[in-house]
Length: 288
Image (cartoon, rainbow, N blue to C red; front, side, top):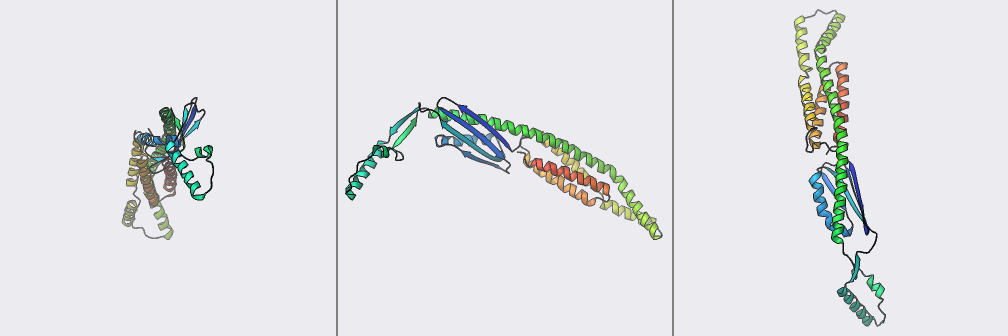
């Protein structure tokens, strides 16, 4: 199924003691670029989150954020780092001895020293598990959004592709009249010059013109590209890069076709074809 690279997914989980919110955002990118923002309490989940993303996504710049809001502290208890506290006390006494300034140690200020007072969450494993489940739900929502947008893009590409095929068919129908118009143009000029017409030379020039204006190869290639595009849209694996290449080939053949156009009708049809190809190319840039 075709997937868009731009999408948004969100999931939240609210329990008695904490609330979790996970969001995923993505924009176009040539490769898979993952950026993960986690609170310190959930930092250990980054490898698991990255692995889950790479297992289902292949292209796009993915931004993941998980927030953790503590509602109550019923699952928390405090512990004092006695080793660090003893070192701080010894250091304070030593400073007092060296400076000759006697000062009492404020217990509250000591507790504010980083690492002295440690918070132990008795539900750390439960928190990690809930956070991972919350992420998985957000990822599922994110992938579903990508697939919905991809389905819309697929329908648009199919419709544009059918129009391109129709224009190719129109140009094929116009080709038999091109040489006849060329002949009429030359005959008109010759009659205006009152010059004697050399029929064999006229036919020879028409043969040269037919060779210069021959676009059968370009039309065949455009038909082939249109067929390949239709097949690619039915593939289950990511086809964004394949479609990028096809759009380049479409554009190349259309440019050659326009350069060989000898009449205004064919030129106008070719311009319409280029517009359709450009519209398809813009949509393809958004495909995974």
